Amino acid sequence: MRKAAAVIATVLTLAACSPSTLAYGKVRSALVDAGLSDSNASCMAERMTDRLSIGQLQRLQSLQAPKRGLADYVATVKRLGDAELLGVTTSAAALCASGLAPERKR
Image (cartoon, rainbow, N blue to C red; front, side):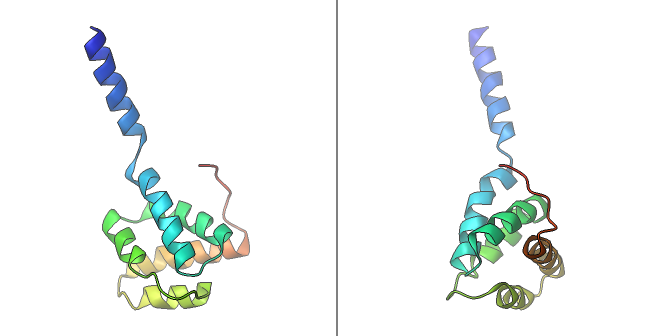
C-alpha cells in the first residue's frame, strides 16, 4: 500500500512539471543570450512556452547570436520560415514590450 502511494505521488509530481514549465528557463536564457532585456525575455518566454512546440522552441534556441534588439530578433525569427513561430514571437514581443501582457508568477 505504501509503495502504491509513493508511485502515485511520484506520477502526480512529474505531471505537474509540464513541458512548458521545463522549457521556460531555457527559452528565457536563449532570449537573453540573443540580446533581449531580462524583463522582455521573462515575459516572452512565459507566453511562448505555452504556445509553441518543443521543436519550435529548440529552433528559437539556435538563434543565439551577438546582442541585438527586439526588432532584430523578430526579423531573425521571420527568416526561419515558420508562420506560427513568427506569429507567436511577434505577438509576445508586442504585448511584452508595450506592457499589455498580464504578469504571471512562475
